[in-house]
Length: 88
Image (cartoon, rainbow, N blue to C red; front, side, top):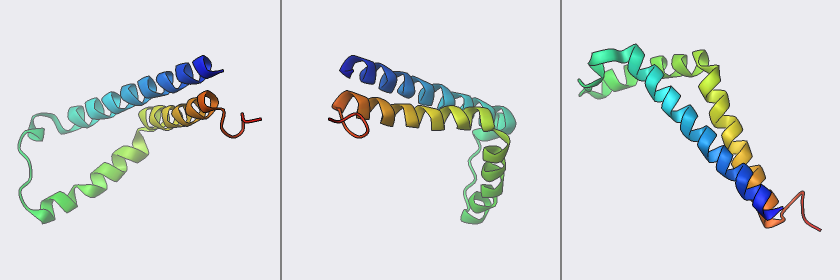
């Protein structure tokens, strides 16, 4: 069970990594070359928050990969340590 738990946790970390990379590529593709030119005022930075929320709403694939990866890490660590619901 310990080996299986570590394997599931490792696959969860890999899934989180893939989801984060996919999210970064999506944001980079939408923003394009303007990503290098960072906004310098607080008002402009706060004005970009609706765009971030909209990207989260429109990107269920990578968001789902990150959430499933987090669940797999939790599940794998519980399985490896013999914790709930796998304890005696």
